[in-house]
Image (cartoon, rainbow, N blue to C red; front, side, top):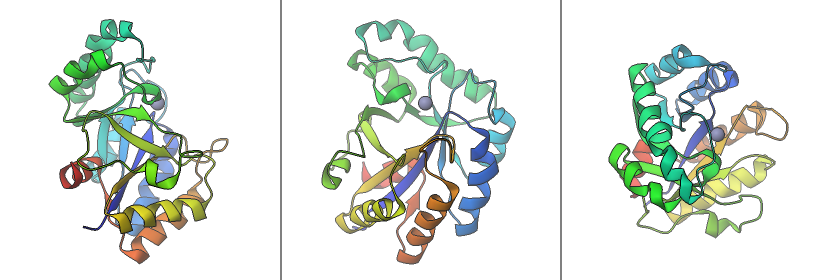
Amino acid sequence: MTGAVSFHFDDGHNSHYRVLLPLFKKYGFVGSLSLIADEKRGMGFEKARMMQDEGWEILCHSKTHIKMDAPSAIDLAETEIAEAKRILEENGLHTRQYVTPMSEAHESLLPILKEHFDAAFTVYTNALTVPLPDLLEEMPLSPYRLHRACMKELPLERLIEMADYACDSGKWLVFYDHDIGYSTNVTEQILDGLLAHCKERGIPVLTSTEGLKRFA
Ligand SMILES: [Zn+2]
């Protein structure tokens, strides 16, 4: 089986609407936005709905972006998981997957994640230090312990190498980052190069749901 890549962009930055929507469109691809339900700044729900209408997928990224890695996180579950989903849905944003803040979720949250979502990205793996094969998860995937590879600080050559490796090894690689071009985050130019490479090599660029369906 051919592998595939997906792209997540976290925290609802304006640059996602301004930069990513036209950039991905240029190649006929879409990505996924992980949105904080309480987020009043950034792109806001209206622009997110416009991206959803263009085929972008919405992921739930908690209500207030609080860290949820301690046993006490269970006290936050109703607000940060169930209510966050409710807020997004009430604003016309359909969400079937969860991205835990800082990619860390205490195991006590698993039952409530399973109750509300089909999958959850809850594991942090450092894409700068972890060897390439270890960045890609073993099959079958564990849908509530999914991890992603942050594009921050990585040069285009390395990102291409990662996408090629995923494709050739028949695995699913989920890239992510935040505000485009901020500090050491991935830039529009690097993303452009990576998407062009995926297009040219025929590496499938899937939404998170498509990836889950194909690989889990
Ligand atoms: Zn975040």
